[in-house]
Amino acid sequence: MAQIRLKNVSKRWNNFVGVDNFNLDIADQEFLVLLGPSGCGKTTTMRMIAGLEEITEGEIWIGDRLVNKLEPKDRDISMVFQSYGLYPNMTVYENIRFPLKVRKVPQEQHHERVMAASKMVELDDFLQRRPAALSGGQRQRVALARAIVREPNAFLMDEPLSNLDAKLRVSTRAQIKNLHHTLKRTTIYVTHDQIEAMTLADRVVVMSKGLVQQVGTPMEIYDRPANTFVASFIGSPAMNLIKGSIEGGVFTSEGIRIEGLTLAAKGPVTLGFRAEDASLAQASGQIEAPIYTVELLGDATMLSMRVAGELVSIKVNKDYRAEIGELARVAIPASACHLFDHSTGARIA
Ligand code: ATP
Image (cartoon, rainbow, N blue to C red; front, side, top):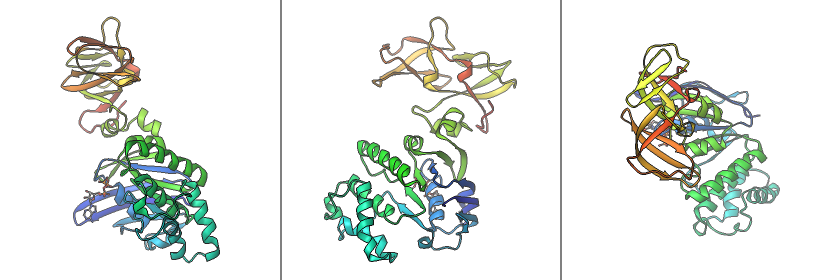
């Protein structure tokens, strides 16, 4: 059982707060992704769970053990890093076997466990090679096999795909997801890539500046972002955000007017809507503005236009063609709109 619990965990270096009062229960077998921009505190959070970074305040529990004072090697977790950390003078076989030797696992188990782990990541044909004779993707698979061979209670993965090219990233990502399904071990995975987070996670923790911004399933975070930071970090393109004001359920700003909103409040707000929730209007639209760019994506066409000083993206049918400068009328249903506090950015409707 590896339920992992963080209670009021903070990390400070002198006056700088790296992680601020982090609270979370990670369920046994859950795949949890820590997501956020560079410097938001995700690696520090993971290093504290691993025991590689001392915590300034709070408690970390793994299963029913308080691990604050426990050495990394006694926490029964395996780590996989972005830099694979392989031993260059050992073969793939020896690299994978190394954790078993260090942990004094009985010799007679080694061969079977190394073979099982290497099969899982499809490395069985490369066992006698040294890391220098492997591609980046193969090296990362050796690192994965070396984590698997220990049969730990939990895996911690820190941007394991960052050094791979785009195609390999997709296939290795699928392999990690499949491994999680097979091994059923609690996994905490750090990334700044929202696609990785959305595709891998049972739940995502979105972080910014040391603070947790939202915890939820990928769809919860996509459909109901807790604030403008999450709204602008999740989704490709990011959610359109426009500052304006609301009165009587009508939002207005320069070049945009949306009626029928459910918010009774009056005053300045930030309106959000996703590119795919907008469409081209037959007659008058909620936005009427000249087209700024037309981008052909293959499966769709992306239009952008300037509205209230922001570049707004609209996803339309792949066959739609238009010229830059042409007037576009855009329909935005009130039901697809998100409203955020204009100063704090917190979701209000
Ligand atoms: P990245 O994606 O770039 O790895 P991250 O979200 O993982 O970023 P962390 O490595 O957790 O970010 O760092 C969080 C913040 O803490 C950063 O501003 C970083 O500069 C700071 N920090 C990390 N380690 C130390 C340290 N030893 N001393 C002082 N500040 C540190």
